[in-house]
Image 1 (cartoon, protein in one colour):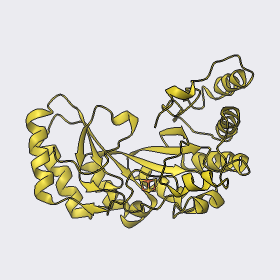
Image 2 (cartoon, rainbow, N blue to C red):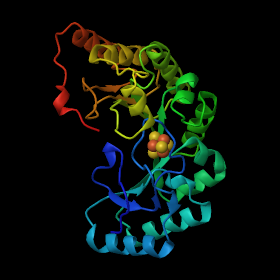
Image 3 (cartoon, rainbow, N blue to C red):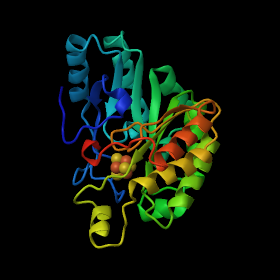
Amino acid sequence: MHYEGNIIRPPSEANSILLQVTVGCSRNKCTFCGTYQGERFRIKPDDVIKADIAFAAQYCRRQRRVFLCDGDALIIPQKRLLNILTRIEKELPWVTRVGAYANVKSLKMKTLDELKALKTQGLGIVYLGMETGDDVTLKNINKGTTAADMIPMGRKAMEAGFKLSITVLLGIAGRERSHIHAKETGRVLSEIDPDYVGALSLMLIPGTPLYADHESGKFPLLIPDELLEELKTMIAHTNLSKGLFHANHASNYLPIKARMPRDKESTLKLIDEALAGRVSLKPEWLRAL
Ligand code: SF4
């Protein structure tokens, strides 16, 4: 397979065929993100993508899922993206689901009918990096969107028939806005009502603007108990009809897997137990991005 730069994928796509159809991220301005630093966003040439699908047809016959890398495959023009999905269906008939990252901009650029056509052609799940529902924090981290934009775009993805997985970031608002970030994120998640929520804990990446702010004393990193309080407030304010709320990423101190609304109260109790020191937290050296 032909890969350029950093290849990342959601944890749930660990066993998927990683088909890189774009390089970098169409935004590439979020202050905490170092994934595609210095990388100019581009769509890979069709012949390279075709060759990779042909390679997968020969050597990836046991993998049932495909993940379209990099940062924002949904931004590919409709006809080209449909052609990629059609080729995957034709050449990798054993594949049961295709996934991709999405963002508010790419969801806005496609009509509901276009998204439905992508769903029909095999795109089954989209992953949306929301980070926070707090508008002040969204501005501070230069996410380029607002809660009022994210809610209809998240709902649009679900109306198109995609499974929707949303990532939020504990600690991203710093200390002063921690509580507001938690409450607003819970509110926006509740309004979208996605299938999956993944909460990660912020880890600073050298070279990013947020790292520099931390070094100069402008941005504080929360201590584990503060992150737990934030997670507790977020979960308390999140009302999902049937979604999974996971905080079991390697960056988190307390692994959580909750089916909402069934496990909400027991999860809040577990966090209280951890805050009281009766449940041990992951040691710092075991945390990773
Ligand atoms: S956080 Fe996501 S949208 Fe922001 S720069 Fe990184 S990959 Fe792009």
